[in-house]
Length: 527
Image 1 (spheres, rainbow, N blue to C red):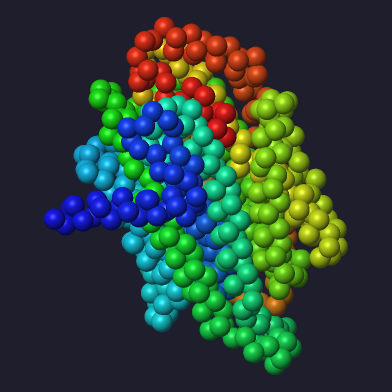
Image 2 (tube, rainbow, N blue to C red):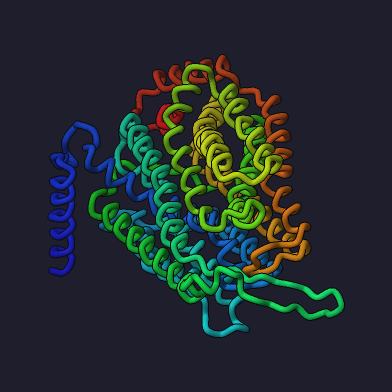
């Protein structure tokens, strides 16, 4: 009786969601493709990952340093350990999901549903300053790692859900396009919600005046502290409020996904090859040189933008001196990136993907140099941020647009090897997240050695120099290295078209429409 009532509730709720979006529900037995309602519901499920990711990427470092008031050394440990743990959990969760039994609600949905409350709770607690001073490091390290684990339990099954919502490749590609659009909007929402709420409650800084003949420091409040009524406790509550709003959005998106999307058991293959082990998958990818060059190239360019993302808030606040405007500058970057995605999609379609990489990634280089060379000017900073967002869009879009080409090239080179598509994506995410942890950990550790002053109105010259290196010199160097590696990337437009024709020939020769070869041959068109 309970199971019947739950199934009836799911059907009623899905019907109501379709009515809200203004579309008719499509029966499982109908030969037509997925309805727009279901595609939207599926796409909404990708928003939590990007919303929380953008909030953590832009604000966690400055939160740990200036609000939780952790020593930069301990903050670097938390940032590195959390990202490294996140990287390790990806292949682990993928391994467990591939061995999950089928339930009446599907194979992926139970992972998504049961991980959501734990992910939301741990995310909220990341933004809570514990009352115990001695346990802060353990608190943040624990809940940051727990959240990354629960987020992985949500996002890995969600990414694989594409294969279980329909058997039509065209509908899978269309659903992926909806998902990419919503995920880009998710980064904008995360930056806007976190930035606007927190930006309105900036606590006054502290002016540290050191005596030349004494080892102690006389700490006095900034002159604006007498005027400002905002305290550090208000800033702490603002971070909690922002995390609460994002947590509610997380739950709503998960509910829309669960109620609006239904897994189809007949979509899954009856015969599945034995899953490849971690090291077996690593050796498989290492032997495919185009994949290695693509991943290493994007690894360097991703490091560049991760360094910029993780340190730009501190750079705006202290080096440029725009303490009350940093949230608007970050929002402008993401807004520019969101609006630029369709432009880059048209550009790479017309001029090719390698050309898009050279122009799109290198576009940010002059602005990274300009922002540290000119005298602090708010209008110029807004212009630089607007232009930089265009390059951020290219860095977001191009990896996911070029990975399917590498998968196709592997299929052409290894026509008898099937079912390895997920390995290409999971290992790319693994290396990217691990590199992200290293970059954030090292950058925060550099601030520690430079003498970073928590909540200081001014920072030592060594800190300003370090921040300039982290948002300009280091990213520019990584971008140059990445572009040099892309020079050796062998898959150009001609080879990509040849691979596409060979795959079509292989598909034509295979009379089984559900064969292994149909799984991702045209994914590039969905991005």
